[in-house]
Amino acid sequence: MTPKLQQFDERDTGGLRRYEYDDEIVYAVDVGLGEATVDVAGSTVMVIDGDDHAEFEVPESGTVEAGINNGVLTVEVER
Image 1: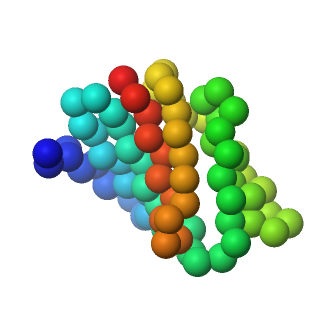
Image 2: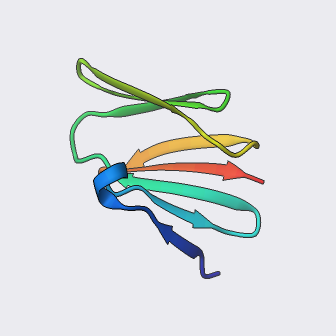
C-alpha cells in the first residue's frame, strides 16, 4: 500500500508529514530521542517532554491513536 504523501512546508510545521490511506490518515513528525510522552483525549493530542507541553486538535473526525517510536511521533486517525 503506497500512501499519498503531502509534505507541508517545514518552516511552518517543523517537518510534519501527512499520509493518506484508504482507511486512515497518519501524521508523523520527528520529536527527537528525549523522554517525550503522548496522550490523546478525544481529538486532542498532547505531547509532554519534561516541563514542555504542546497540544493540538486533529482536524479529521474518527478514532485517534498516537505514539512515539524512535523519536517519531505518529498520530493515526481511522476514517
